[in-house]
Image 1: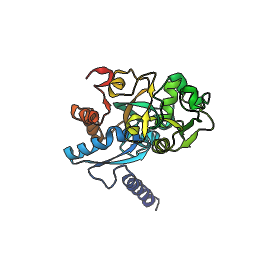
Image 2 (image 1 turned 90 degrees about the vertical axis):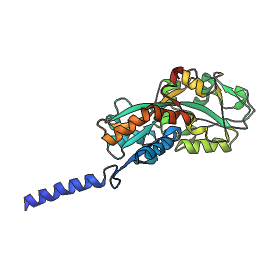
Image 3 (image 1 turned 90 degrees about the horizontal axis):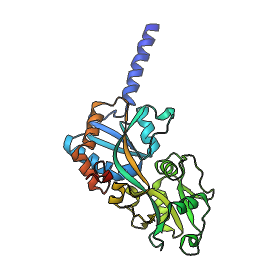
Image 4 (image 1 turned 135 degrees about the vertical axis):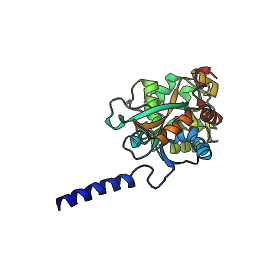
Amino acid sequence: MVANKKIFLILLFFLLAIVFSPSAGYSKNLIWGGCGITKKAFMAELSKAYEKKTGIKIHLKGGGATYGIRAVGIGRIDIGGSCRHKIKGDILERNTRLIPVAWDALVVIVNKKNRLTNITTKQLKDILLGKITNWKQIGGRDRPIKLVIRKSKISGVSYMLREMVFGDADKDFRPDAIIKKSSGPVEKYVEKDLDAIAVSGISSARKRKGLKFLKLNGLAPTKKNIGTGKYPLVRPLYLTVALRPSKMVRDFIKFALSDEGQAIISKQGTVNLKEKNGTH
């Protein structure tokens, strides 16, 4: 009786492992999940090209940068996408490896009808902290500044913004900021409100016609300025994998890093690895 019970439990374990494995039900497929910015920067087109080349379909899910790191670590997805680094010492992120495949920039976004064209890093800091609260303080009209931010401090944009601008990933922003759950709603809000300002990833924000990017310290977030590193807020975009990824995963990573894959990334308007630091 005891032996039968042990056999049953062993069989049940293997059955659950099959059912809940990332690619269960997909014999030649992979599952990707992660930040929308990485998806828009290159993953959507890269996955299409890979399927055409190999017949292997990559199912794209959302979830954000944190999901893109942590879901790989627990085996929920095969490959992740992240626009932030791993959090040092975080037990939930220790079982993943981040592979840089492209470069992105954090951009200061305003409504396209906003007459302002430039902002300094110091002014951006003061807006985030609530020290500057009116557009007239930085050369705009006499209207209150509505700061729109992401909900989580560990989202791709929030984490990297705090790290790059303040050197403190736990920095608190002004308490009356308008909070949205992801970059998409943040960008949509700014599109509709002339008084709004936010920071987002250029790979996502450039697809919205109602937005304008402010120059930062006189530098526009052009592909050239991002590639040379002259633009101040540049960050890597990652594919995340398990510490011991499957051959299917390794093959896709090789494709993403190949000349063919990097050319697809560049074609999307995203800075690829060779284009960084003006090496192209």
